[in-house]
Image 1 (tube, rainbow, N blue to C red):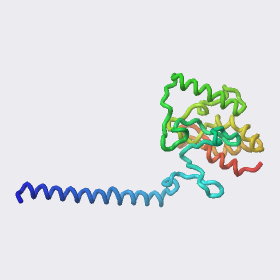
Image 2: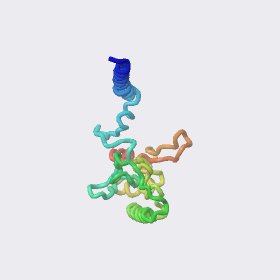
Image 3: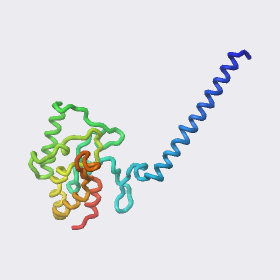
Length: 204
């Protein structure tokens, strides 16, 4: 065997050993360590921030919006509604995205006008009272919160459908309103899923 053959063989063996070591360290050990740390330190977040109802059934994630509508896509009036979604067929975590339509796009303008009319009619308010997040999808299409303004125009409808007082529903909205991050970043938001679960457990 000449020198070049021995060098090539040694180089190949080194490459194989490096690949095996890197696979074991980066492909096996590292994921196991990170997964273990996540399960010990932040189990809820590591498992998808799952939300369970009073019976312990998983009903969604605190990170992903979902529709509160019937099989035909008609919004259920006894529930607070989330903002629109352009993710897949709507609220699809596998297809997170916005519509990518610019503010002057005629299709977007028409869609917003249609949504505004529908939201106003559904909640029995004037179209001028409908806030922006009620008619526009977020960049991800998965935002699980709505603005307090959007929640406010839904209170009377939900109260009426559930036979609760409007004051009782407003109190639940307030209890599920999250303030600005760190006290100054962003705007207050209302957690729709948590609010609707609280409504399901509420008594007049």
